[in-house]
Image (cartoon, rainbow, N blue to C red; front, side, top):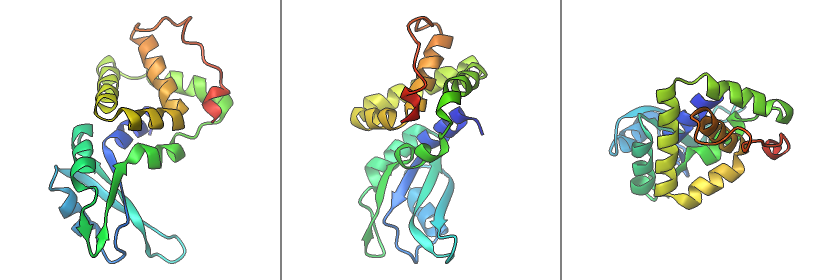
Length: 176
């Protein structure tokens, strides 16, 4: 999976915390289906004990449905617990977008350049929606994931929105 596919999946997914340990993926999938079609729901389990850790990720078809789930299901009560539904980017992409700092600019540039124009446009459109709907969360996500910010900059260079001479970024910035 390329870095941009990870970003796209993260934008369509939500983090679900404070899940009762007895809840099943099927029960949660049914709850999260109230806002739209769920592509997958994955509970996270402890490797040693095999018991649920109390959180998971729900993937939808598009970012709009994921945003709707954050608005409408955050605070939903199940089994005496109040669910915390948040942007999966802030929880997951920090781990999945780890690239050695000195290799980051090249890896990201290659990934962006390999995207078909319509997919690059869709990525920019989704990011715009994310920024419009929740500017504070978008800012936090970009600050915590400098690789994503760099990928968006590279997409703008490829799309000829930004001059390549202006878009020079130090690898040190990407190593946060």
